[in-house]
Length: 189
Length: 199
Ligand SMILES: [Zn+2]
Image (cartoon, rainbow over all chains, first blue to last red; front, side, top):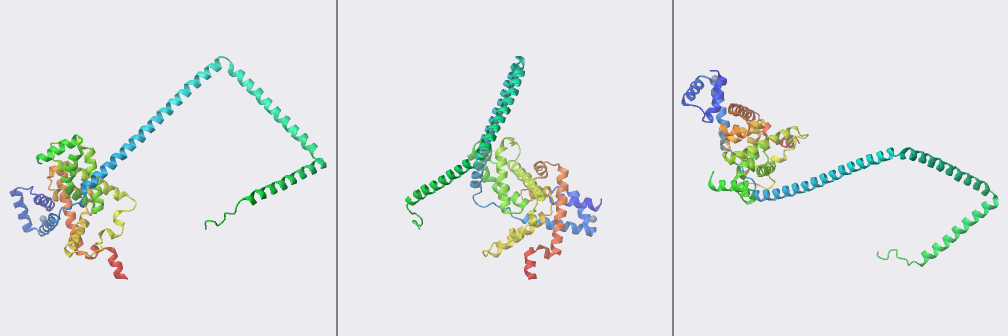
């Protein structure tokens, strides 16, 4: 047998997995093979180190902390279940709405195109557009005419005067209102 | 397994929380020990042990009563810690790159015995840290929890020959790491100590 095989068996020996015969064979080999003897020593050292290591305990109150965690976990799961249900219901509602809109839209389209209403409707819409454009042009014409007429110096002077009077009156009125208010600044420190 | 335990397990399977908490009480120590030996940090071990019991609680229906309850629990703990170690390896900042504050002794003066024990556990964890997570799990289940080869194979979803060779390789790696640590004592000191000396 090769050294590698003996060394594999040493690990089994430590775990009491070998027969007396196999143990004797390893002992015979290590008696003559220096390398395997020191390998066995090293394995025994590791074994002693592990065997002597204590079992570690958690800090006191472990199961109480577990109960707290379990309750929190359950509550979180319940919240998530609620949110998921809500989202599913919303999604279902949305899908329903899409289907309803689709079906009624299709029905509308069919009835419109079947009765020839659609072509008539488009024609009417075009007419409406034309009327809108015409009314816009009319408005522009009125504004244009007015501005031409109002450029007269007498009218401009009158407008400026009115504006000045309005400003003056506003100032007077606002000053009166503010003067009547009691002074509260710094009253609370 | 004693009769009380059988009773608790049966009642826990029917949704009795009181019975399950008896099981937590009874098995907190081995479960915590697996997590501590796997992860090497008390706070992480506490978290992993709690998670193990949460998983056991939610999967109690999948427990096979013909199996040892302790092996079933330790299997859950081992798998969870193996996953955690693998995730740790792929996370952006490796736990091992962090400053050595985890291993600093508490600021309060401690009896020499406690400090020595702390030192010994640290040394042991540094050795175990050299092993791949599934090797580490096999060693822990074998040494601290005295599971048979068959039970280890079942717990780690592996085969008997694979566990045999895993334990053999793990022991060789540990022997090598121990020899290296003895020949290079400077490496065992925390990094900050060297820094202080340099000042
Ligand atoms: Zn040899």
